[in-house]
Image (cartoon, rainbow, N blue to C red; front, side):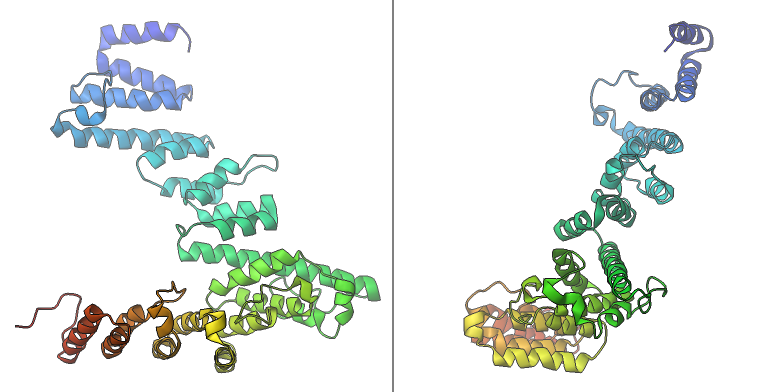
Amino acid sequence: MNATVFDQLQSALQQQGPLAAIDQLCQRLREDREYHALFYALLLRKRHELGVNPVPTGPADELPAELHDPYEEGIRQAAREVGALLLQAGNLPHAWHYFRMIGENAPVKAALDKYEPGDDEDIQPLVQIAYYEGVHPTRGFDWILSRYGLCNAITTVSSSDLSHPKEARDYCIRALVRTLYHDLRHRLAAEIQARWNTPAPGADAPPDTPGIVRQLIQDRDWLFADDAYHVDTSHLSSVVQLSATLDPCLELSMARELCAYGAKLSRRFGTPDDPPFENGYRDLDIYLGILNGEDIEAGLAHFRAKIESYDLQEIGTYPVEVLVNLLLRLNRGPEALELARKYLVGAERQGRQLTCPNLNELCQRLKAYDTLAEVARELNDPVYYLAGLLAARQAASGVTGSVAQPEK
């Protein structure tokens, strides 16, 4: 900063007083875009206004108690002003520093939504804010997918913790399914056209038209000759398995088509074949169909029959747990409880960690307190046995809510 500025500040202090000098400093910092210094100048103004030492010699909570709230409000106002100026200047990472300080995401989220990075711009700082810090995870994932590619995007979703809300995670998985589906459709169509020198069926259909991949592979087993494949098979397996968390949607239909494609691949490219998915993509296709509301009863019968054919003592109860979770997702709790009651009591006795709710949790969720007492007795658990009897009695007497008056 020009040395004359210091002389001007001293002159303003002597002739117009402290507040005028501080305001002159703040205005000069705004004009020079010295936004970091402006933040502390604004705090200097607030400290002067409150009549405390203008030089912060300790943490804010060392101020008199009655000044804590107004000083905190001064910090928020300064952070908002500086953050807004940095957003106007297009410096989102530095703006986020100030808005994060005061716990206000909305201005940065709005800026991320509109921001279009340049082709050569390093977008990692934006991805860090948008996706990993959760300010705008869907926007951040769009950048991951478009800039870093499908492989990186799959790894990101697969390794992410559960901090993102379900709608954001579902958005990411749907984007993965669409991307892989479009890549596969394009490559299949190109190979068919190259072989017959004529456009492939459905080649001109809109990108999200369902059924195209299934149409392209129908009666064309030559596409899979000599262990041929058209997309990375590890990507195919990962995306299909990730799609199993989706609710009914167009992308689930696309994932089923990916399964139809995968089922035609050489067995060496199959999915993990642990029960109840020992038939790889064929079993996954049936599972996804159930989730998408297609052939539900036939699909459930398919997995029930598998369970009855297994030696669960040998392979474990995971196939049962899969079906219990599936029934719960279909809001068929009583069927899930009946299945768990039939097959999972032994696992409970052994103290195994289940991938579905245990019997106690299922009974409480469904308010099946008589069953809870029966299961507790079988498991030699007197506490839950008596709790189940009491809960059943309260339910029979019309007591509702989480807090009940004790009986005398």
